[in-house]
Image 1: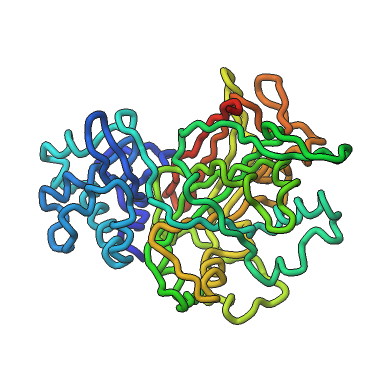
Image 2: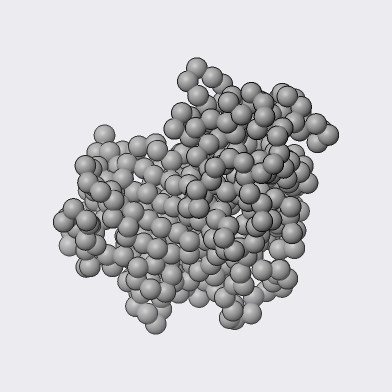
Amino acid sequence: MIKANDPKLRSWVEVAPDSDFSIQNIPFGIFTTEGALTRVATAIGEYVLDLTQLHDKGLFEGLDLPKDIFQQSTLNAFMALGKEKTRAVRNRISDLLEEGNQEIQSTYLKETALISMAEVEMLMPVQVPNYTDFYSSEQHAFNVGTMFRGPENALMPNWKHIPVGYHGRASSIVVSGTPFHRPKGQTKADDVDKPSFGPCRLLDFELEMAFITGKENQLGDPVSTQEAGDYIFGFVVLNDWSARDIQKWEYVPLGPFLAKNFASHVSPWVVTMDALEPFVVPGPQQDPEVLDYLKYNTDCHFDVNLEVGIQPEGAEETVVCNSNMKYLYWNVKQQLAHHTVNGCNMQVGDMYGSGTISGPEPHEYGSMLELAWRGTKPVPMNDGSERKFILDGDTVLMRAHAQKNGVRVGFGEVKAKVLPAK
């Protein structure tokens, strides 16, 4: 077991039982305060811990870290140090925060390096060179296929043989809290002959998790499922927005384009793969048997609870979905192995969306397309209104956490408000 994951650990920082940021978590993020430069931090309870100040005072002595490693605007340089080094940093932070440790608690660093979350601005945690979106939830693929092709032909012939995915747009991935305008594009109604141009009418969220690579492979060198864990640094919650009416008209023959590249939102804290180790569970039985390069010898599905809420402007939030990351058919090791089997080279900071995560029950469906079943079953809001898709002024919120043996490891939230089309 990784030392920082010990369920017996307690912190001298007060951490509420329902906090996402226990001492067993120790995520990494980028923050700033008014008039200050960006820097790297971790989260504990309701505080961020400024790692630059700790490093300047020699509290990471012996780990041989570059002097400016935490004086960065992204986590890319830190992740590139490699798993051995980043794991050592996480373990050291755990020591410093552990109950009884006085190295921070008894010094002025307690007042300067430990900052209330209410006083900081969280920024995009990584610079994303490349973005890939998979389609790895069987229930989601079945639901969507059923709507358009019927249950007998819901899954395409390749779906249970390969982790289907596409290359998306990295530049429009933004951090939680960034508002965005409703996209415009071409759409075509079924009862007319020609397309028209205008704002998307069927704006949808997609509940996803995304992993981030912290290690590169050379062009031509595939990464096996056995090696994949060394490449995956951590995870964020991802809302991969979709314009369903634009998508329907444009996706043949080359797939997603303008319907998917106008905005994707991520949570600001990157939870390490190490922190999720205690929450690993077996995956589903894969039938038919996968090809050898997709076989794996250690479980890599995660029991992470997922939640989606919709908050109409000026009203309270309505939770519309409760799902779980364990419902993915293809796990992250298989996704990375398939992505690189042709020799594709990964870069530090690359992001890989899971695809919409839907469970077997209707309240576990991870998109409005499914929850409202193509608009035929409107979803009631607490303010008395209904939603078939997302309206201007709505804020969509997503949250994720894992919990076991009294330990909670969470991601915080990712939220975004929809503004009218420009």
